[in-house]
Amino acid sequence: RQRERALAKRCLRSATASSVRDVEGLRERFVEACKGYIGVPYGRKHHNPDEPEYDAPLFLDCCGLVRRAVQDLEHDFGFRIGRWNQAYQFETLPVELTFEQLRPGDLIFVEGVYYDASRKPQRHDIVHVEVFIGGDTGEATIGSRWAKSEPSEGKVRGVQVHPSYMYASKKYDIKRYHFRSLETWLRGVCRSETFSDRAFSAAMSHCGGRSIFRDEGASSDEEEADGFAPDPYRESPIFYVGEGNNWKAVAATLEQRGWRRLPFEADFTARFDLKWVQQTARIDYARHIEGQLVNHIPNNVVLTSKARFLETVRRHEAATGSRFRWHPPSFSTERAGDVEAALAEAGRAPAATWILKPSRGNGGKGIELVKGAEALRRRLRGPRCVPSVGVGADEAESFGCSDARGDEAGTDAADAGSAGAPRSLGPAPAEGWVVQRYIERPLLLDGRKFDIRAFCLVARTEPHLWFFHPGYCKVAMEAYAGAALDSRFAHLTNACVQRAHPDARPGAEAGGGGHIWSLAEAEEELRRSGRWRGEEGAFWATAEAEMKSVLAWLFESSKGLLERRRGYFDLWGVDFLLDEDFGVHLLEVNSNPALFFENSPTLRELVPALLGATIDTVLAAQRPQPPEA
Image (tube, rainbow, N blue to C red; front, side, top):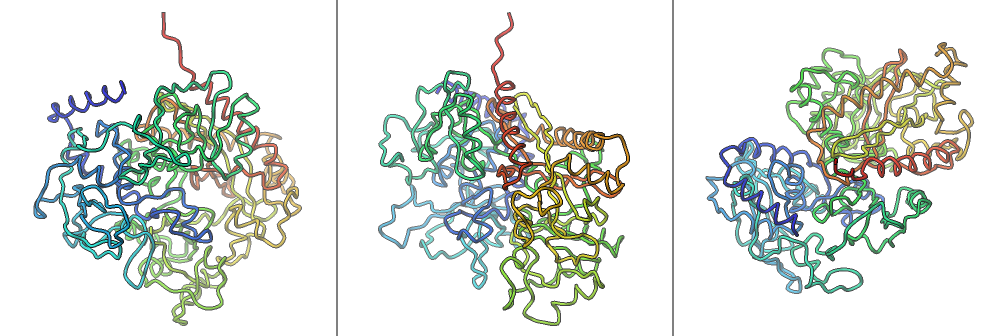
């Protein structure tokens, strides 16, 4: 509470010093922050487990989008936004505007009455919020409006750009649109009239471990950690680990060090010394107590989202003149200018192959390869296709689905010659693609493509301290030479793709049906095949030195963007590819690297060692230093 009072005083000081605040620049950055989440789905409960969105790393409803964008810019705004919903945000922005006065970044709140009379009304009857951008129509907004896509009605789920703020809902009767100025927030003030701007305390009643106030205008009105002082260095500290991604290995690592685990049902509590979960959305940063260890930096998407990564790299290149030379030419279809730039780049190399990755996809889902400038042009500008009968679900996920119109479906393949483009193309992802020049001459292991999974540990953010940890190789199950572009077992090295190969043998060693190779096994194969003739043991030392240079560049590009607070840390999986000239190429940064053993002897040895080193390094790096005498 003392921290909250101090923060409030800083907000008031910020308001009186508005002349030195870059309010216009902050307004633009707020809009850009919202755009960075285009394509993020609405909520897991609205998807089936077999849908790719079900395993999305992040979900945002309407108020969640606004809250997340403000959290990304918390240091610029000068306040910490409350965790409550759109009604709270409505109260904190009291300046009403006319439609003609709206500017990009202002918020449009929807007042409505639920058709279901049994449903509890929202405060002030505020049922929805979106961010005004104007756009070509003059009425466009960014918002998370629909929970599920309904193509026949023009509805696309999750965060999207909508041509107009006006719409009709099946759940509530819209009574009025409120146009509210962002100016109050821009000047560092965020105060409500009826919501507590602190976590609830005395007036808390619980039912099954949950607050009875959970549905009243709050995203997470759970118990307050009143009086709890986290101390990861005490005897038998407390940790919470979320289900999934081999949580048992994480728990075992901590329990071996004397930690005590909370049950899964305690995911709401703020009474912990360390929290380890798969997604940032599972951490309530508004209730984070400085010194509590949490395993994700809130806005790590500046590096771990494919589209946001491009923005981060470009911003740093523009500011410093330093070119990021370890990444193939890349473009985001979420930006209209990038589509033209990608086509222009393809025109300069008309025979090149391009890889199209869903901006927020994972696990190899939805990836496509096309060969040639004309094929790329058709894919980026052509009409969307629909699945045809006879295409398997796995094919549709990985490399699209065939076009039911027949003749046009084969055009790209014909242009690609004998190598072929994907024989079947599916609907473009709602969130758009990241389009990259495909590295067509990769270094091969036993004739097969591979990439290297390394790790980057951000042991602390205040100040930053990053570490490199070597990893392992993910090797394709099918030969690379002569493989058609729609052969996912030759081109995609993701574990979830390769383990589906009929010849994959869990637990097999390298070369015997195993997809996971150790670095030593890979170097041995490169020496056996004559690809590497240098000093024994020197291959990875050389390659990893270059990988560390990549991470050093990323550190410089993101250190001013990543949120900083004592207790934040992050373990990222960083994927690299080597070309046949041993050049290092960064593929992507993953915020939730797989920790499963995959029945692999290599991973069974590596993962526990990685987790142990992570915990020990974080504890050493985060330990408070005694004041100097």
